[in-house]
Image 1 (tube, rainbow, N blue to C red):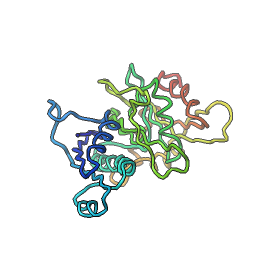
Image 2: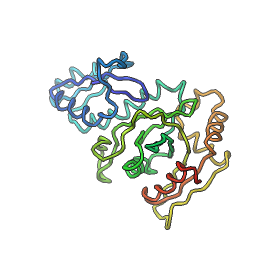
Image 3: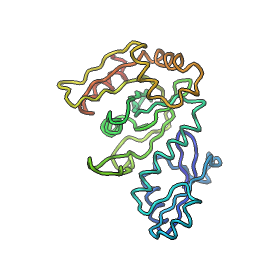
Image 4: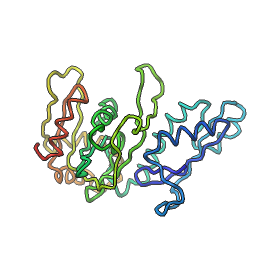
Length: 269
């Protein structure tokens, strides 16, 4: 099948004794990123990925060198595929997009988008899963912003840790979670929110505006390939200025962010 990530197209080929099972799983969870091969807008792929699912150790060893990704079990292949595709796509687009380690949610009527960024463990996937039963799910991993503030959707599978002790994350189709799918709208950045999850926080989530000096360290930390940018601090500060600055949300549970995000989309904050 062919999938698109940040407008980078990958032909995904499944091989090995488990090829049929693997192809079905990839098609299922990557459905929202799928591109129909042979459609009028289907350009040639930018990259080709060969995924090998093979239980037999000897067969696995013989074919591993010619594979992009290989394993003896399906969960391992699926867990590794998502970060591989994301890394390759981000690397491909590093020259023309500002890409945040963030989730992005949008108003289904206007296309206005809020990007909520933060390091691993701040609950971005949970935020996307919670808010996007009403708002449009654009990504839970990499929010890409073009120079005109347009958001490039990347509605990848959500990576969910079912149990705290699990080694691998389950890859789940956004459609199976009842999330709102991107449409033909143009999505544009309306707000930047730094996530600060505090399990001990009590009461409503708190939304505060940050000065540029306060916001820049974490903004830089959660932006990909800043070293490849020309004057990265100026570029990020200008981007923040164009959307009214950066806000920081302190919260305990993702549901608490719903009214805060809605207020930004409505222009009430």
